[in-house]
Image (cartoon, rainbow, N blue to C red):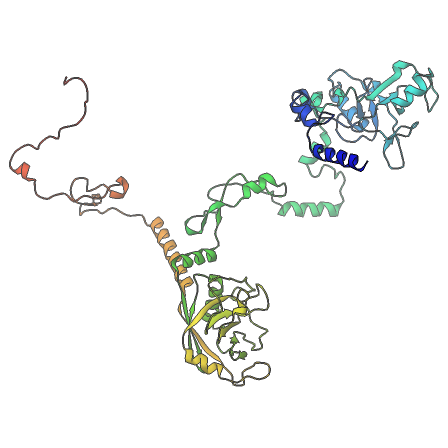
Length: 537
């Protein structure tokens, strides 16, 4: 018996991963045996848009006072009556319709506020067969009427016990026949028929329409309002009013206002593309980085001078902050409030406590880390902070390598002159709080090279030059008689043609005639290669 069980287990283990099954899978049915392919319906089914049974067929909103026609189309009384007065036909079919032929409906709701059958208490859904009895207008499910009236041959209304005939049953929703709920076939939607409310139109044009008898105070307030009121002018997108962006401040991309207005309802509609403006500070930083410019500053202390080289091409924002503070005299008179031998010396706080200081931009700025700018060696200039992206005005200079500070404090320069001064500063003893016992003071900060200032001057000079060219166009020279002489670009034939405009460089013409012309012999003709036509044959 044990061997038999093992044999059966071995057989089942071998065949448990076979694809042969005793039934047809969905994939086999759809792809191999001609079943229905998955995908969207086409034709009339794709255009079908269904109206829920609890909505008015005219306003397409949930009804409050439901009425129906003989064919079971439901309308709201407040919507259908004005429509019939103006047009006089059925909004769904377009056939003539009178208001007196409408039948009032009575829907019943349960404790949850949902429509349900008052006999079976089943909630109405989109798949429920809903009917009404014409004499009473009460709404039931078809199942209840079929079982209790039609099959029992009891033609009395289930709630009021009023007699009715089979022709009095009106089908409001038949799951097997939903054509009357197709919005694509509605007559008033096809022809865009709407009831115009004259009062609303007058109120839109005249703000005083609803104020029939205002008091004196209201009249005075309105008169003062109309005196100062100016109607809003329409936005005109003209070239003169638009911001003209050109030169170095122009980006290669747009502001994105057109896309924002197209995809968002909260944004105003813009139909004209506008070039985005570049931040001038970032533009200056890019130029300095491309030109690999360095900055140079001298800190004058009571122990001597420290010459600093700033890496403006790698950490431009940090260097720009330091240069601006030096130029403004921010560091003048400040002290180095913290000094630790074989580690570093820290300063840049005008309060001298290590808790103050502001950046040149008014707020703390982000860290700028570069993989090759590390705290390696003596005399590295780096920013002091209280955490990530909290750089302000304080800085420190290392006395030795501090690799544990890498990617925590941004290195932006180094000492290139005055190492003896740095040695003298390190020898000053400090107290228990690492504060130097003898004050180490920055007497002045001199900026020798500021690449950001140089780039800004170049930009301003270029802009001024362009403005002068626009204001003062080139005037051609005139002789004593007042006749204008054309400008000469080079000597020889075509001397009045500008080389740049023709795309050719000016060619120097020989001043003396050639030897062949001097001898009187005609120049030799160059023999052409190839056949032009058949006349020489």
